[in-house]
Image (cartoon, rainbow, N blue to C red; front, side, top):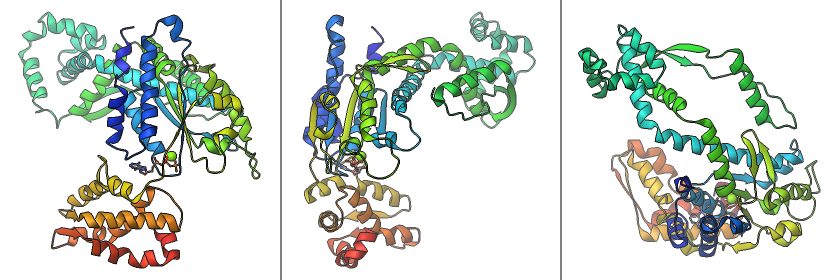
Length: 462
Ligand SMILES: Nc1ncnc2c1ncn2[C@@H]1O[C@H](COP(=O)(O)OP(=O)(O)OP(=O)(O)O)[C@@H](O)[C@H]1O
Ligand SMILES: [Mg+2]
């Protein structure tokens, strides 16, 4: 299978962990587990086919309090894996309006994502050719005299023949124009384009067959009733190139191949992150007309155990999709889940609560650290924000204390504290005379003292 390498970036577990380290502080065990799970998918691909199909993915439950990085780990992992990745909240399926079988919709959504990914990959492959064709078509539009060739341009491939055969070389104007086009000298010019109008009236019909299928058949229907409904639009040259390239690449890629590849990607590499799993475990909810939690678990079971789901692209087998579940599990426990479901999530990892020292690191170390974000934001106003290390320690300490006294929301607390701390500077930044702002421990204490001392205030403001 030569295609495989396309969508499997092969990182070792150690490399995966070190990538995750760039964004998530601590939580070593959880990072290791997801890294192993990801690597195992690749290992499975290398195993002889008879055995390969027997190897089930080792699904994971991440257990830990709120705001300690569960979702963040899953999100970052998805980027690394280059796999179709879907995040769903298990509670979504207990809401009114959902019928049981809608749990299958996550597989349909995942497949949809995979189709988009596969399509992008294929489009990337034909990008150069599509751009060449688009350039020819644009030149045809810019040179209305050459109508005969413009007709041929419609047939795509022929245009290249024209160029290759040197027929268009005779036209020095065309080549001059091409130069100008490539040098961006025509960027301000407008051209008129015929673009196919794809939008169809959206009719929402709720059926048990699922909305997606319905939408598709409507599109097909309308597509057949008004084939090639076109619209004339005036656009600038760069936009025209973009539209034409898009059209050409649509024609160049083979959608059947894209779909086939997407289904394979979903079945072999798909990852579903099932958040809030704890909320569907344990006793039935006592209030509200919710779909029973156990009912949702029962519906989940076949999907996690491996079954076939009908999507609009065809049948998708779920046997090898990796499920990573997460939940705080402070009221219910994993052992409250249906035994069969427990068996399908053999790996449990606990994430620890974050200490003050972790907060200091979270504020400063990740690539997207909060301090880095605020510095960048204020730099756009010409303000240079400088934090003393003691000031950062003070922020971390205050966040920890508020978490202890009110509700522990983990690292999310840092966001509220930072926002409050920099409230005045954020407001005044454009009008400041002195463009260097030094944040000292004293400044932090001063700014947040009142709120910290008054528990009611901190409850509402921080
Ligand atoms: N260990 C960590 N390292 C760096 N940032 C973190 C860490 N934990 C949490 N954060 C930050 O806090 C925010 C919330 O974390 P996250 O969404 O992962 O929480 P969670 O564990 O999924 O909580 P919940 O149970 O409420 O869903 C993230 O956006 C992230 O920026
Ligand atoms: Mg979360």
